[in-house]
Image (cartoon, rainbow, N blue to C red; front, top):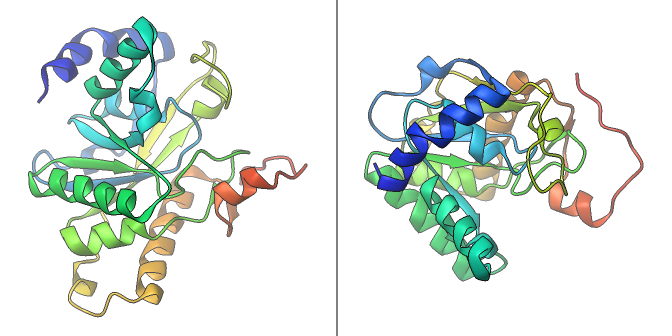
Length: 234
């Protein structure tokens, strides 16, 4: 466990829990030891803040490299904070970056750690749950570890897209579902159909926990072509 993470666990985490009082369900599904993937919906930038403070173990996430490249005191503080909560910088937008991201995830899992991932690839633009990218299925099949579906609830009201810091006055919830096991599929051909089936199954379990309306499109495309449709939860 890193020194920065330990420090944050005993200083920052109690303050955040006191201010927002996040409620939890299903934390007992997180294994006390050994590797596992936590696959979550993604409503807000603060998802990667509140999930680690309620989890009983350290979780490693991917994060945009821009978060680590800021200038001045603010940039250095932000980079140190991101590393302290076990966020690993990843360049996005090319094939080499995708391979690097996969290597990071597999390294964490092979060391017996917990790896957190947002299969949607980006924050939901409107509170709905969007189609998952199949990178998670590649990690699952290669690492042969259980997947825990996770639902973050209310974080989009605490820190909407564009808000610089989390807001008070809203509740936050974290639901963790029972582990999903796909090891029986790991020895077969890893074709696009199988990757899509596993990814869609994981997203279905996340949806059951979150109650979100599901959209069979990638969130990144929705952001590129916004609509006037209001978010709806079911």
